[in-house]
Amino acid sequence: MKYPSTFTPYRPSLSSAQRMAKSTKDASDFLRSNSAMAALLPALTRMNALQKACAATLPTMFAACEILNFEAGVLVMSAPNAALAARLKQQLPTLQDRLQKDGWQVNSIRIKVQVGRIAPPPAPKRVIELTDNALSSFAELSNSLSNDPRSQGLKDAIDAMVRRRKARA
Image 1: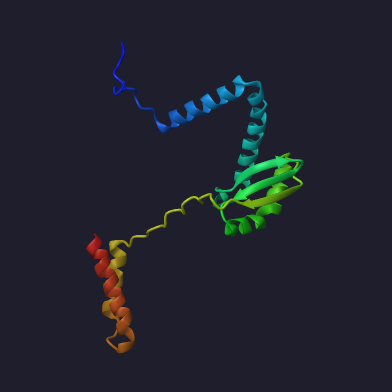
Image 2 (image 1 turned 90 degrees about the vertical axis):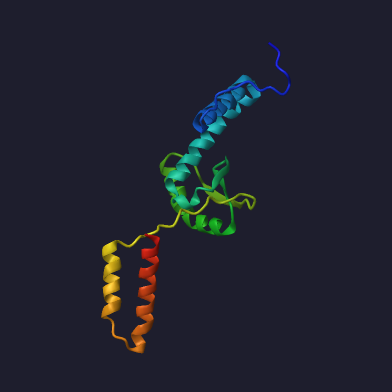
């Protein structure tokens, strides 16, 4: 049956994990299909393993850093900005020792700043809510403070905090 050019047949949508698995499978099938491209597959696998080894060794703040190249014992890593590159530079001796213990022949590590890259968003800030018991304790504290001018600022601050917290609830 021939459909008009504006008709799109229904295709059930895939989850993001299914799309990722399909695109990964398609990419690896493409690489295996061509002999010149198939030669890249071991290098890609090796770089992926090295990236995972670095990620396991470095703190999570370096998640935006990636392996760019690894040839002749020289590991080249990218950092999204100069500040992260400076912090990464402090971690290099530890990283190099760990990689050597894991069997990687890393003689030196260089860092390149890739300014166009975007660092991952910061972790959400923890919001700590006061319990009803804590709010009543603050209210009691405010009532127990003397009415002299030195205490008035603290009393006003406590009263404002208690009012704000009660208004949210």
